[in-house]
Image (tube, rainbow over all chains, first blue to last red; front, side):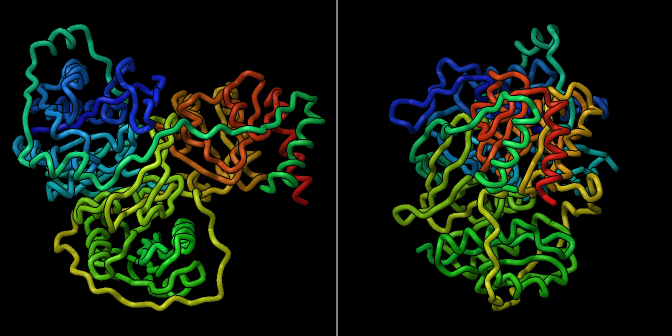
Length: 260
Length: 321
């Protein structure tokens, strides 16, 4: 079984994010970068599937600048076999549909049985690429997957998290599955894995699409401005005795906030 | 004026979801012709009453295979409606179904996409949204560069409108559904019977590490009970195994925007704030006066939650009588 896992390099969720002077971009130069946490669930699941079947190949696919190879290397250290990256600046800067188009081109050339990726990336959170990729490939998909039960070589029943419960979806390969938190616990790379990863190949590739079809100009959305979240001011804090504070707050909820 | 808006209204098991009215209410605010798309099996009876929420015309697509969500079937229906109606804006609420359907439809038709909008409006003839990025550390104002644009709006970001005395016109829409039913939903497993989902609740009471033990979630449930609220949780509580991930609010959980959010024993890490800072009213209960949660709380109680919560349960019960 050949599995491609789509992985994105993103700022760590702990990182301090600085908005640049003209308010349309983020300063990423001194920020700690990591593998998108949701993509880690996808990498882990691919490795488990390979282990369960006693063989197969796990390929990491990334669209991003050259320094994103660091994240591919981390996934190789976890146990993936090789990586491919589209890093030519001309293709970067587009929206989620542009990224999906690039990945579709790369993936078609690889001919995998299964594509796994995180449900969204924690940086721009467009929540688009995985499912858009399935449409581009003409494949079936299931998003928000929290469990995969294989019912055959090329068939699975997946749990898809929805409001108040889960859908049990029957799906056949080839397919795209997007991972939700809870799918698994990603492993830490061992020292042996980290050393082995240095020798695993990362290939630089180009999509069939032209830059004009996938770049910022082609994107259906543009950023007007970025700002820190609006401050919530005027909050009241009560440190009184419980018998005083609680009735006061409940009264304010009723009369001032009018939420009761 | 927004021109023509096509609203996808979600139903499950033959019942309209709260998101349906939220989306229609927003469409009415944006102005213009409001069309709704209703997809399912035997759902036509739900159509005309959507007029009360603002739909002028409801287009129905009915088939046995559409009884439950089917990504490619629903995408075919929405794509057909977009091609027939040529709207300026396609609007959905960012539920599990809405997000999935938007992505597949947008990719099929190459639409301009605005996802998980906290707010959506028209500016200089384009559709413009504010969305949260980088785990809530950045609020981005983004604009669709062409029409039709397709947008998903965060659940509860906009209120359910007051019902109007109106019935919608109902028109069946014929759609060529895919021959093969791929990714078929076999069944739906409910989380806990009768439990309010965090993303559909008007009030949420959330518990965090300050509860000390999983058994103490009973305090949260008791307070949620008197408020008629859903139960939420911080990542710390979920990672400790105290409660299921479906209750998690925050960057790697759900983003919510209820009218009241009560954070109990939650310090207010930035990743948690990312999921709830757009709530209309925030109450925080924490024994640490310097807990970051107090920076976003409208009303903060510095105290022992094991005393404060039972007192609040009693007080809310009293007030509601």
